Image (cartoon, rainbow, N blue to C red; front, side, top):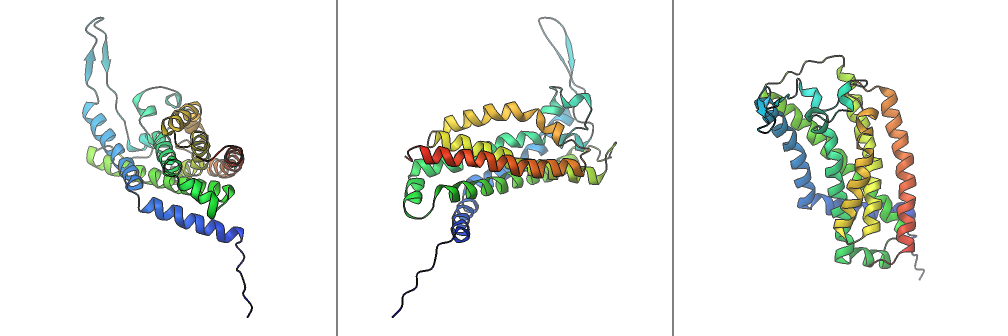
Length: 267
Protein backbone atom coordinates (compact mmCIF):
# COMPACT_ATOMS: atom_id res chain seq x y z
CA UNK A 1 0.00 0.00 0.00
CA UNK A 2 1.49 3.30 -1.13
CA UNK A 3 0.86 6.37 0.98
CA UNK A 4 1.27 9.68 -0.77
CA UNK A 5 1.79 12.85 1.19
CA UNK A 6 0.50 15.98 -0.47
CA UNK A 7 3.19 18.62 -0.82
CA UNK A 8 2.52 21.79 1.15
CA UNK A 9 3.32 24.34 -1.55
CA UNK A 10 3.68 28.10 -1.15
CA UNK A 11 0.36 28.67 -2.94
CA UNK A 12 -1.51 26.31 -0.62
CA UNK A 13 0.07 27.87 2.47
CA UNK A 14 -0.93 31.38 1.37
CA UNK A 15 -4.49 30.30 0.57
CA UNK A 16 -4.76 28.64 3.98
CA UNK A 17 -3.32 31.67 5.79
CA UNK A 18 -5.58 34.08 3.89
CA UNK A 19 -8.62 31.95 4.60
CA UNK A 20 -7.86 32.08 8.33
CA UNK A 21 -7.20 35.84 8.36
CA UNK A 22 -10.22 36.75 6.24
CA UNK A 23 -12.42 34.56 8.42
CA UNK A 24 -11.07 36.36 11.48
CA UNK A 25 -11.59 39.76 9.90
CA UNK A 26 -15.11 39.20 8.59
CA UNK A 27 -16.29 37.62 11.85
CA UNK A 28 -14.68 40.28 14.01
CA UNK A 29 -16.77 43.22 15.30
CA UNK A 30 -13.64 45.38 14.90
CA UNK A 31 -13.85 45.36 11.09
CA UNK A 32 -17.51 46.33 10.97
CA UNK A 33 -16.99 48.96 13.66
CA UNK A 34 -14.20 50.59 11.65
CA UNK A 35 -16.20 50.52 8.42
CA UNK A 36 -19.23 51.90 10.26
CA UNK A 37 -17.17 54.74 11.73
CA UNK A 38 -15.79 55.48 8.26
CA UNK A 39 -19.35 55.73 6.95
CA UNK A 40 -20.64 57.98 9.73
CA UNK A 41 -17.69 60.41 10.00
CA UNK A 42 -18.24 62.27 6.68
CA UNK A 43 -21.98 62.56 7.36
CA UNK A 44 -21.34 64.22 10.71
CA UNK A 45 -18.59 66.46 9.34
CA UNK A 46 -20.63 67.74 6.39
CA UNK A 47 -23.83 68.26 8.35
CA UNK A 48 -22.13 70.01 11.29
CA UNK A 49 -19.82 72.23 9.22
CA UNK A 50 -22.72 73.26 6.98
CA UNK A 51 -24.75 74.26 10.03
CA UNK A 52 -21.80 76.26 11.43
CA UNK A 53 -20.75 77.84 8.13
CA UNK A 54 -20.59 81.62 8.46
CA UNK A 55 -20.86 81.64 12.24
CA UNK A 56 -18.63 84.11 14.06
CA UNK A 57 -16.63 83.43 17.22
CA UNK A 58 -14.99 86.21 19.24
CA UNK A 59 -11.83 85.85 21.31
CA UNK A 60 -12.80 87.39 24.70
CA UNK A 61 -9.21 88.48 25.40
CA UNK A 62 -8.34 90.14 22.10
CA UNK A 63 -11.77 90.77 20.60
CA UNK A 64 -10.60 89.12 17.38
CA UNK A 65 -13.40 87.66 15.29
CA UNK A 66 -13.10 84.33 13.49
CA UNK A 67 -15.55 83.33 10.78
CA UNK A 68 -16.23 79.63 10.44
CA UNK A 69 -15.90 78.48 6.84
CA UNK A 70 -17.31 75.09 5.92
CA UNK A 71 -17.17 73.02 2.77
CA UNK A 72 -18.35 74.71 -0.41
CA UNK A 73 -19.15 71.45 -2.19
CA UNK A 74 -19.20 67.75 -1.39
CA UNK A 75 -16.04 66.94 -3.33
CA UNK A 76 -13.86 68.99 -0.98
CA UNK A 77 -14.16 66.23 1.63
CA UNK A 78 -12.73 63.77 -0.91
CA UNK A 79 -9.69 65.87 -1.82
CA UNK A 80 -8.29 69.13 -3.11
CA UNK A 81 -7.21 70.16 -6.57
CA UNK A 82 -3.46 70.01 -7.19
CA UNK A 83 -1.86 73.43 -7.05
CA UNK A 84 -4.66 74.76 -4.86
CA UNK A 85 -3.43 76.73 -1.84
CA UNK A 86 -5.70 74.67 0.41
CA UNK A 87 -3.63 71.57 -0.28
CA UNK A 88 -0.95 72.62 2.22
CA UNK A 89 -3.19 74.66 4.53
CA UNK A 90 -4.34 73.61 7.98
CA UNK A 91 -8.02 74.61 7.72
CA UNK A 92 -10.96 72.31 8.33
CA UNK A 93 -11.42 71.37 4.67
CA UNK A 94 -7.83 70.16 4.38
CA UNK A 95 -7.74 68.27 7.67
CA UNK A 96 -11.24 66.81 8.00
CA UNK A 97 -11.39 64.84 4.78
CA UNK A 98 -10.99 61.30 3.52
CA UNK A 99 -7.25 61.31 4.22
CA UNK A 100 -8.05 60.96 7.93
CA UNK A 101 -8.96 57.36 7.18
CA UNK A 102 -5.28 56.46 6.83
CA UNK A 103 -5.00 56.89 10.60
CA UNK A 104 -8.10 54.77 11.21
CA UNK A 105 -6.51 52.06 9.07
CA UNK A 106 -3.55 52.16 11.46
CA UNK A 107 -5.87 51.43 14.38
CA UNK A 108 -7.34 48.40 12.63
CA UNK A 109 -4.00 46.91 11.52
CA UNK A 110 -2.33 47.44 14.90
CA UNK A 111 -5.20 45.88 16.85
CA UNK A 112 -5.56 43.01 14.38
CA UNK A 113 -1.86 42.08 14.54
CA UNK A 114 -1.42 42.82 18.24
CA UNK A 115 -4.20 40.35 19.07
CA UNK A 116 -2.12 37.59 17.44
CA UNK A 117 0.79 38.16 19.84
CA UNK A 118 -1.27 38.84 22.97
CA UNK A 119 -3.33 35.67 22.57
CA UNK A 120 -0.35 33.45 21.72
CA UNK A 121 -1.91 32.68 18.32
CA UNK A 122 1.19 33.82 16.41
CA UNK A 123 3.54 31.62 18.43
CA UNK A 124 1.36 28.58 17.84
CA UNK A 125 0.97 29.53 14.18
CA UNK A 126 4.69 29.77 13.46
CA UNK A 127 5.30 26.53 15.33
CA UNK A 128 2.82 24.22 13.64
CA UNK A 129 1.57 25.50 10.32
CA UNK A 130 2.92 28.69 8.72
CA UNK A 131 6.19 30.48 8.17
CA UNK A 132 6.80 34.17 8.65
CA UNK A 133 6.66 34.97 4.92
CA UNK A 134 3.11 33.64 4.69
CA UNK A 135 2.15 35.65 7.76
CA UNK A 136 3.49 38.96 6.38
CA UNK A 137 1.89 38.47 2.94
CA UNK A 138 -1.47 37.51 4.42
CA UNK A 139 -1.55 40.38 6.91
CA UNK A 140 -0.53 42.86 4.16
CA UNK A 141 -3.39 41.74 1.92
CA UNK A 142 -5.92 41.77 4.75
CA UNK A 143 -4.78 45.25 5.82
CA UNK A 144 -5.12 46.49 2.25
CA UNK A 145 -8.65 45.08 1.85
CA UNK A 146 -9.74 46.52 5.19
CA UNK A 147 -8.26 49.93 4.34
CA UNK A 148 -9.89 49.99 0.90
CA UNK A 149 -13.24 49.11 2.52
CA UNK A 150 -12.91 52.06 4.90
CA UNK A 151 -12.15 54.49 2.07
CA UNK A 152 -15.12 53.24 0.04
CA UNK A 153 -17.37 53.53 3.12
CA UNK A 154 -16.15 57.10 3.65
CA UNK A 155 -16.96 57.97 0.03
CA UNK A 156 -20.49 56.57 0.41
CA UNK A 157 -20.89 58.48 3.65
CA UNK A 158 -19.72 61.67 1.94
CA UNK A 159 -22.41 61.28 -0.73
CA UNK A 160 -25.06 60.74 1.96
CA UNK A 161 -23.71 63.62 4.04
CA UNK A 162 -23.81 65.91 1.03
CA UNK A 163 -27.43 65.01 0.38
CA UNK A 164 -28.42 65.49 4.06
CA UNK A 165 -26.62 68.83 4.40
CA UNK A 166 -27.79 70.23 1.06
CA UNK A 167 -24.28 70.85 -0.25
CA UNK A 168 -23.82 71.10 -3.99
CA UNK A 169 -22.46 68.20 -6.02
CA UNK A 170 -21.40 70.54 -8.83
CA UNK A 171 -18.05 69.67 -10.37
CA UNK A 172 -15.59 72.56 -10.56
CA UNK A 173 -12.44 72.07 -12.65
CA UNK A 174 -12.75 68.28 -12.31
CA UNK A 175 -14.68 65.48 -13.96
CA UNK A 176 -16.21 62.24 -12.72
CA UNK A 177 -13.20 60.50 -14.25
CA UNK A 178 -10.85 62.61 -12.11
CA UNK A 179 -12.74 61.69 -8.96
CA UNK A 180 -12.61 57.98 -9.84
CA UNK A 181 -8.86 58.27 -10.49
CA UNK A 182 -8.40 60.09 -7.18
CA UNK A 183 -10.22 57.36 -5.27
CA UNK A 184 -8.27 54.60 -7.03
CA UNK A 185 -5.01 56.39 -6.22
CA UNK A 186 -5.94 56.62 -2.54
CA UNK A 187 -6.95 52.95 -2.45
CA UNK A 188 -3.66 51.83 -4.04
CA UNK A 189 -1.79 54.08 -1.60
CA UNK A 190 -3.25 52.03 1.25
CA UNK A 191 -0.77 49.24 0.42
CA UNK A 192 2.12 51.46 1.56
CA UNK A 193 0.49 52.63 4.76
CA UNK A 194 -0.85 49.22 5.78
CA UNK A 195 2.66 47.78 5.28
CA UNK A 196 4.11 50.53 7.48
CA UNK A 197 1.53 49.80 10.17
CA UNK A 198 2.28 46.08 9.90
CA UNK A 199 5.98 46.81 10.35
CA UNK A 200 5.21 48.88 13.45
CA UNK A 201 3.03 46.06 14.77
CA UNK A 202 5.65 43.33 14.40
CA UNK A 203 8.17 45.61 16.10
CA UNK A 204 5.86 46.23 19.04
CA UNK A 205 4.21 42.77 19.00
CA UNK A 206 1.74 42.54 21.92
CA UNK A 207 2.40 46.16 22.97
CA UNK A 208 -0.51 47.81 21.15
CA UNK A 209 0.25 51.27 22.52
CA UNK A 210 3.73 51.16 21.02
CA UNK A 211 2.55 50.03 17.58
CA UNK A 212 -0.03 52.83 17.53
CA UNK A 213 2.54 55.46 18.53
CA UNK A 214 4.96 54.30 15.83
CA UNK A 215 2.21 54.11 13.22
CA UNK A 216 0.79 57.55 14.01
CA UNK A 217 4.28 59.07 14.09
CA UNK A 218 5.24 57.69 10.68
CA UNK A 219 1.76 58.41 9.34
CA UNK A 220 2.08 62.09 10.28
CA UNK A 221 5.33 62.33 8.34
CA UNK A 222 3.66 61.11 5.15
CA UNK A 223 0.22 62.67 5.73
CA UNK A 224 0.95 65.86 3.76
CA UNK A 225 2.03 63.77 0.76
CA UNK A 226 -1.39 62.13 0.35
CA UNK A 227 -3.24 65.15 -1.12
CA UNK A 228 -0.27 65.87 -3.41
CA UNK A 229 -0.11 62.32 -4.79
CA UNK A 230 -3.87 61.77 -4.90
CA UNK A 231 -5.44 65.15 -5.79
CA UNK A 232 -9.08 65.53 -6.72
CA UNK A 233 -8.10 66.18 -10.33
CA UNK A 234 -5.96 63.01 -10.47
CA UNK A 235 -5.20 61.37 -13.80
CA UNK A 236 -4.07 57.97 -14.96
CA UNK A 237 -0.45 58.79 -14.05
CA UNK A 238 -1.46 59.27 -10.41
CA UNK A 239 -3.13 55.86 -10.44
CA UNK A 240 -0.08 54.19 -12.02
CA UNK A 241 2.28 55.94 -9.60
CA UNK A 242 0.29 54.78 -6.57
CA UNK A 243 -0.19 51.27 -7.97
CA UNK A 244 3.44 50.63 -8.93
CA UNK A 245 4.98 52.66 -6.13
CA UNK A 246 2.61 51.14 -3.60
CA UNK A 247 3.50 47.62 -4.70
CA UNK A 248 7.25 48.26 -4.60
CA UNK A 249 7.19 50.01 -1.23
CA UNK A 250 4.87 47.37 0.24
CA UNK A 251 7.27 44.64 -0.91
CA UNK A 252 10.30 46.40 0.56
CA UNK A 253 8.60 47.17 3.86
CA UNK A 254 7.24 43.61 3.96
CA UNK A 255 10.79 42.27 3.66
CA UNK A 256 11.76 44.42 6.63
CA UNK A 257 8.83 43.02 8.64
CA UNK A 258 9.92 39.48 7.75
CA UNK A 259 13.48 40.00 8.99
CA UNK A 260 12.22 41.56 12.23
CA UNK A 261 10.05 38.51 12.89
CA UNK A 262 12.93 36.24 11.94
CA UNK A 263 15.46 37.91 14.24
CA UNK A 264 13.24 38.40 17.28
CA UNK A 265 11.66 36.04 19.74
CA UNK A 266 7.96 35.48 19.13
CA UNK A 267 6.26 35.94 22.50
